[in-house]
Length: 465
Ligand SMILES: Cc1cc2nc3c(=O)[nH]c(=O)nc-3n(C[C@H](O)[C@H](O)[C@H](O)COP(=O)(O)OP(=O)(O)OC[C@H]3O[C@@H](n4cnc5c(N)ncnc54)[C@H](O)[C@@H]3O)c2cc1C
Image 1 (cartoon, rainbow, N blue to C red):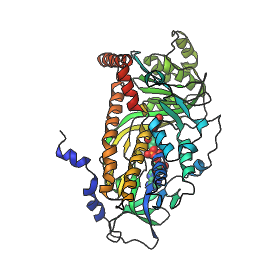
Image 2: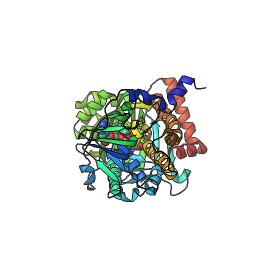
Image 3: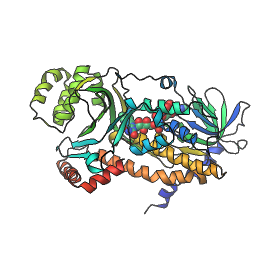
């Protein structure tokens, strides 16, 4: 049973508003304008909630201001070059795509740059045990597992859908520098911008990423830990066209290769910060060789070669040639796109609550997760959908869109769902980050069992989608 202190932590943070309020004294300045809703953050989550609000008749006339610190110019003018793919790519689940279609966004996403896949192989890099998903066998013909999409492609589609919407202001190159509440603002948030202006609002939505200033300003705690692992991403060129996803669990972290159109692939190699730095320093030829090694050689060989880069081009081809041919690994990688290697520290973090009076958090502002299950952005899409519906319902009956009563259905809908997923992903990461023979034996038994029991596979696939 949950202890009462835990319950208090999980309840919407209505009780925190007084503390936040008490630090402020200034009255609204003459430059203060009002916007019914202010969204902070022009990432996938912020743009999706704005697009959803502008979709529903009940909310389309609400004034919405979206504030983004960075420039959106590159996103707006982003033109497709089929010989280059961005390195920030996400696998969108069918449910995410279904909602994006419903709110009119998916038709603006460049489909030539989206790769659907129906096969997925994940295997244990220590024992070799594997699980394979094939939706054409499991869920019937025509079901895709996910859709690989550059984050830029999605954001570009969202901006196209938002173009010329009524009562919408997008302020990019503008930073939210503070949020206060005063008696004059009736305790509602006053959002202070870097351009010197202030916006008063009925609902402040924090879609401002993992270090969310809105979360901090509203006194909502977030708990979790660093994995002491970096996610190295790169765009690679494959020897053949691929429509399958591959993930090998190495003791240093999983390496995943996901298909993109035109023989491109998106690589996410989660590993130690030291190894990520070493991999980024390799020449393109050495890097390509190391990626092929990572899908084929023993973990100790991989670690040895990364430590001895001078031996990669001489030693690795011999070691690879000694492996018997295996149909259950991806086809060889033949090139890495220049300037596409980058790495990000990986963390698990979950906010104590997603809502306070006149405040809601969505996307990475509310939760961050290890990329091994490809769910971070999808969770943000689920948040945006659920929050937009809660606001729509309140607006439809003329209720206060910022009250915790309005926002509570969103919190109730998403919090525990996300909490469960964060927990599963965290346990998977820990389970596969060990070489302990007992744990390796048990996890391999589990993987083999999943692989051989169709109803279990069906269930897992439906959950993942
Ligand atoms: C290596 C890696 C691989 C991943 N792969 C997948 C995958 O396959 N599938 C998946 O679903 N997810 C994946 N994810 C997770 C996914 O990338 C994130 O969950 C998602 O991008 C978060 O989107 P967001 O809009 O919530 O936040 P962000 O994209 O971080 O956007 C937040 C925005 O807020 C702005 N901002 C911050 N502070 C301020 C301020 N004070 N004023 C104004 N603006 C501000 C920032 O400039 C930023 O643009 C992956 C993550 C990593 C690291």
